[in-house]
Length: 347
Image (tube, rainbow, N blue to C red; front, top):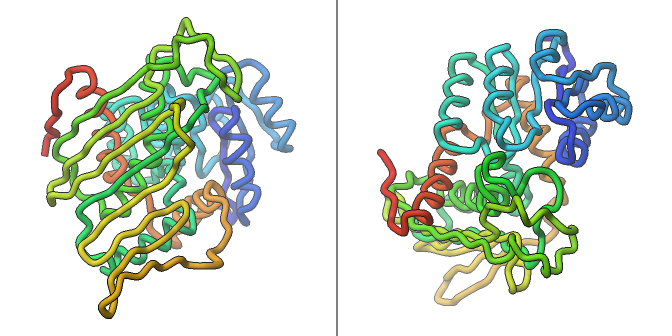
């Protein structure tokens, strides 16, 4: 490996432009040298925009032709597994956008490929990298909140239905609001709770807006004819240590926007967005509000962390086995919503 990490981008759409490229450009010792995309001309336009020397119409060709150390997988969900497995088998480190995959079976295949290759597989769950999440995790790890027995994971949009790409098609994305934005809230809350093992799940999903053509949506109109995913989903998760978690996610709900995480422990509780601690000390109830937390861009911190992992500077913060549990919970919520019954997870 040269001193500079050589990176290729698989999928040259919005998340690659808005998050991955700015992150790599803000990270020292990185060269993004190639991009690929199955849509004709899009990779070349991306390469021209960011001044990179090579563009390809397939990741197979890019992996064969370029001397890469790592790739970012920025494709729609249906292509996460195949692109990631191919890159891992080619000996590349991989940063794959969330969700890990369309299903737990796909995610397990990706995890096995990473283990066989002995390379890094990091999933793009960037909420872990905010200043608030990092600080709250330190409180939890120090034991200041005691035993965490309850969590809430929330990402509710009053209106925010994606009107581009394939977000609204189950066969290409695996689901809707739950797998798109709910995955962030779920992952962060499970991480803040110490990643106990999920053992059972109850869930429900709703498609209250997707088939309607009278919905005010600042992000524009979508194709109601192909919309077949949840625009809201909820779940209750039980863990092996007795703790529980409530998840709420929506693209559209007749309620104010709400995004954040709450954890409650035997010695204190906390919330993010905005950050506040709730504790009892010296015979009084107190609230603690930290000030002047560093302003960070979570996607950039995520990419800096990925590059640091490649360089051997630290272990990966987003561990594959933790993300497999997140994927298992998402699968179980969808299964419970379909059956109307609790889903018991395998040990």
